[in-house]
Length: 260
Image 1 (cartoon, helix red, strand yellow):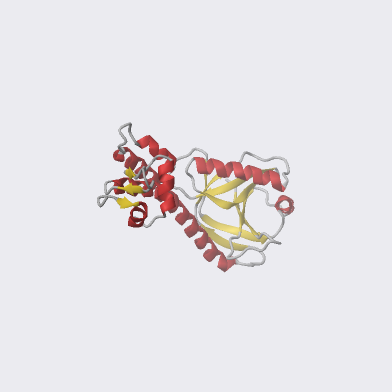
Image 2 (cartoon, one colour):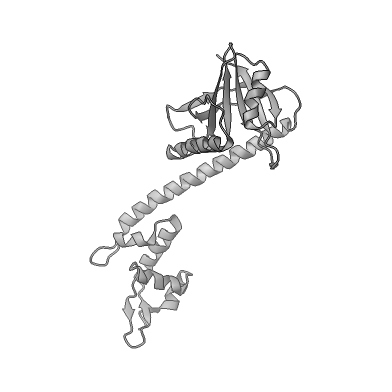
């Protein structure tokens, strides 16, 4: 028996629990090389370390262990190449997800830092804002309650995820007022992925925006804009991203520019 490892010795080689080896045997992805018929003790061979390594790889990159059986042939041999190719695909997807998360974190930290200058500003002020890429909802003509707004934003969010656009929350609104006072409203989500081409992406141009902060509720902002005689203007209603949020207020910034 010197050529075999006991179950505890084999588990210790890779720093795992013996219960994990028992589970791998149960689902059929790593059976002991030898089972003593008298004691029922399990023993493993040196060659099985390769399979154990690849099982650990599957766990690390997110391939379900139950799928590992699909890579084992009728002869009991593991198709390592096919498994590793799938592992490579999964690892690249994880890298992309991590990079997207890092981009989101960087964007949020940058927004918080920039907003420090404008925190609690009173009255109108001018702010330079860089170009933004957004996706928008359909035109909204009726007044929506908060739940319906959230539902529509969720649709945008799911669309962005499906199309690899990296959506940012919270959402905003675009209010356009014609010269005769007619109002159109769209919800929008800013997206961070600049490499994807998509016909549904709209660009908000870089520029100097006349800004005004408000803590009005969403449905009250439309009335406020109407009262301010902003005909021929486009107003971006964006959230002021601060280091911490208050539950009783949600500060928004009205960013105003002339409609072309």
